[in-house]
Amino acid sequence: MSGSLVIAVAQPNALVGEAVRMDGDDVIWVDPPNRRLLRLCVADGVLREVALSVPLWSLAQRPDGSWVGAGEEAFCAIDVHTGEISTGEPAPLRPGCRLNDMVVDAQGGMWAGSMHRGLLGGKGALYYAVDVGAPVVQVADGLGVANGMAFVDDGTSLLVVDTLGRTLLSYPRPGRDLTLAEPVVVTDFLDVPGKPDGMAIGPGGAVWVAMWGGACIVRLAANGAVEERVTMPAPHVGSLCFDRHGDAYVSSSRARLTEAMLRTNPDSGALFRVILRRQSREA
Image (cartoon, rainbow, N blue to C red):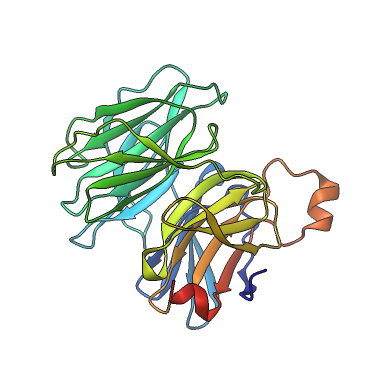
């Protein structure tokens, strides 16, 4: 069992809480169905929200400090204080698909996964654009729901969660361009409840994954084994990030929960802070 402490720090009743990121000492995240950008000022606990003109399914900060996101069909630039959005060229998506999670590489290039709105298998893909105004190209396909993404090993490997396939994949990236080699399965989350969703790199370079429907976040060993599980007070946890102290912030959702389930899990839709036990910080 984990000795970590879990605290609900904000309750915006997010239908779908996604893309938790640190903006300085503030936490920002999105509620795409409600077109909201949410911001928690950690210093005073004040929650603010900004209306968005389009749904955003992910956020990422580029090396120059600017912010970008993935909308339904295109990458965009976003002012995370005002919510102003400038949309780029549409991605060459398959019919019935939309963009989902994203990550930015060390050169500022943008990478995003896609998923079929009806959750059909094999329709998901990965896309790349060097900038918001640049053409978007497909770099991989054959995924179910392409979700949490992170570059590791000094940018030579791209980790991608396939929620529908219930796997974490590693795509070798031999160069610094957009070429990806065939992926390998890192883990299939054996004996972990729920389905893998968002992902973040935590203290010591450990990979952490939020388990949608599993009411937990998990820490993975280098060989894919689950080394730690932190139980969350909400069934659907979808995204997480880490602050400069090594604490995690985890978003949750109210989507696909019955009224009875919401009464049992009143913190669904909240943002949580997870103060990890010391062993996790040093892993």
